[in-house]
Length: 290
Image 1 (spheres, rainbow, N blue to C red):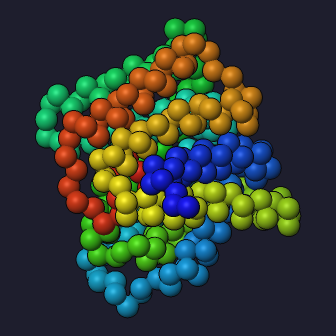
Image 2: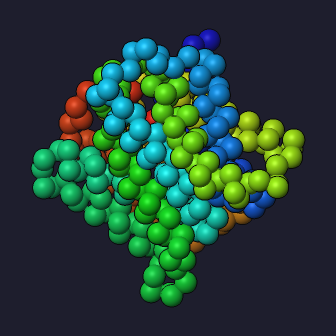
């Protein structure tokens, strides 16, 4: 029986947010940077095994993009996991979504598109409720770092996708991301590594980024980029759901309202602007980060 195409991005979002939720336990053992390093290292090994990096095809002009994308991926992953250690999963994803929404608005060249990141910002404010004086400033700052990193990732993904197709781009950039994370993660993780932790890292790497990328690649073969991107705008809602189920982060009414605004902003950004062709998919997607 043929699987409906829309189920593929749904499964991808579930995998991403389940991987994020389950990472919390590993963060408690080896730290946020240590978790990022382990996940990215395992992911790099898997991608290189599936698609050996086309080193002979690299031109000098490709190096800034490859290095920039790899470093951005590494820092984004560290930032998101550090945020996850301090604030709820749904809140961290909502804040991180400000990055791609802002990029989509700027790329559209239409001032009216700024309404979408603005709407998402209102949603973030509802989720963090700064008027109650309980905002974890460090957690928000790390999530904003992840948002900036995701924005940079989107900008650099297009020129990379124009040069390297499929897994070959990831087999080049994820190892760079792993090395970037190693600078911060190795000092955190050393002395705490066990076979159990290494096996956990393997499982988490499969949940994110390996499985989501495969599912998204299959989905994009049968769905339009617009339909795919609009559906992927539901990701913050999945984060809220998995945060409640896996981490017992039961949302309050204000948080539910906030996440709905972020989802609406993501869907609106897809409808309101035209994305230029990219080699690896739509602007709001391809979560090789987090």
